[in-house]
Structure formats: structure tokens, C-alpha cells
Length: 305
Image (cartoon, rainbow, N blue to C red; front, side):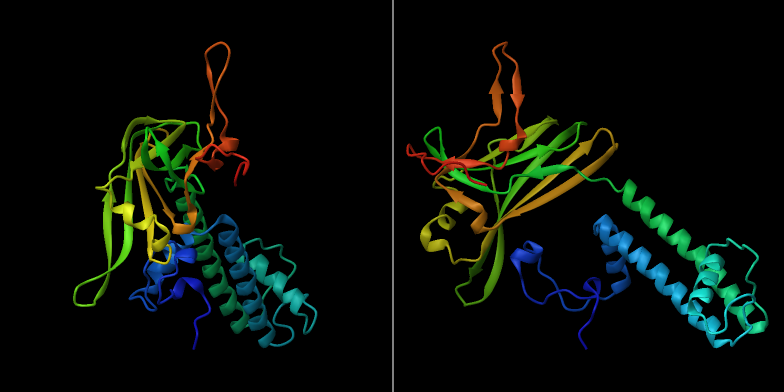
């Protein structure tokens, strides 16, 4: 039977567009661990939706349990009214206790006992998960949507941009660029190899605004064989990892990004985002952060992205 929840299954094949170059398995040894990491890593919208659905679903199940106890199990509840016992369940789980509706008999009181315990545990778990999500350190680093390959000081150069989306600084920032490519051995065995590509500058003492990372695609670069038209159909992508120490969070932060072959623009250059003012100051305009133009004299094509 096909599993319904995304956190309990992973695709058996590599899909770079969906998961950005992560090899996954159909089964994992401990799915509860994967569920916990999914709760921490998913969006706030998905997290809150799951919390609300579980809360409403649990109250609905308890409401059916109270209905199964028969008429008169809950005082002042209309006989057979699911809505009345549902509201009684909400009051019980939240320990509100207005006093109008009360359980009568052993079975209804037993259900109330279990529901009160469930409400305390559920409240503690959701509070702990929300606190863990709030306190989880994140880098707040933005990568350009595309990377470009163009001439820089007469040398073909691969470039991408990184920006700090927060007002605080990241000290001892480090960038690493990896080429992940599918290769074939002499025996015909297929494997994936990782080759680190050297950047012009891989470290920054203080990362506060933007950073344009560059790699020279010369004769010694492993990327040289993957940028031609004949390499379009080859399985490869570029992985960027970012690490640094966030001074506001007082913790080390991480970020990563993947550029697929379709994300790399050939013979192009980024639009300058730094403008010089008449008084000598500099202004950074991040509206052009992802924009590029052809790296040729004919610029009739205009801006992209």
C-alpha cells in the first residue's frame, strides 16, 4: 500500500528538480526520527495546519466516544448531538470546565480522564516543537537564482551571488563549491563523484551585505568539461555550502544551494548592484540581485529574471 504521508517515504530515484540532488531511499529504519526532523524543517504554514488538524481530529474522536456512551452520559447535552459533545471535548481537553456539561457514569469519566491527560501531553509537545522551531539557528542567506559563466579579466569565470538577508553580521563565513557529476568506470560501473572547485575567495572575516563568488574555468578546472553544448545531457550539478558564526544568535549557521545545468547562464554577467553616489558613498540595490545580461557587446536582449 502506498504511504500517504511525505515524511514516511522518499523517492527511490534521484530527482534534482524536487529535492535538489539528494539520493533517498524508499524505507528508513526509524520513521519517527524523520517525522521529528520534518516537523522542525517544514514551513510554519504546514506546521500550524498539522497542529490544528490533529487538535480538531482528536476532539472529534473523543466526541464520538462520548456519543457511544449513550444519551445522558453528558448532562445538558442534546441527545445524539455530535456538536454538543464536540464542544464538551474541547472544554475538557483545554481544562476550561464551564460547569454546564459534566460527565455521568464510569465510562464517560474514564474518557474524560484519558482526554485530560492527552490534552496536557499534546499542549506540551506542540509548545516544545514551536519553541524548537523558533530557536533553531538559520543562516538567513540568499543565493542568486542563477549562476553565470562569462569573461572576467580575460578568463572564463563561473559566478554566483550570496546575500545576507539579516541586519546582523556573520563572522568567519566560508563558501565551498562542489561539482557533483555522474561518471562511468572502465568496468562500466556508474558512480557519482564530487570534486571541489576552488573559489577566488572562499572566506570572509565579516559577511554583512553581499558576496560574489567566482571560480576560474581554466584548463585545470573540472567544470570545463561540463559547460559545452555536448555536456547538456550529462548528469551533473553544482553544490554550494555556506558556514559561518552568527553574532546575534551566538551559534554556527549553515546554508546550502544547488545549481542545475539549466540554472547556469552561459556568456553572461550579473548586473551591478552597487551604485556610486556623487559624495563618494556606495548604495547596494538588491532588486538587481538575480538579474543578468549577455556578456557580449550586443545587449539588445535586455535584462533577464
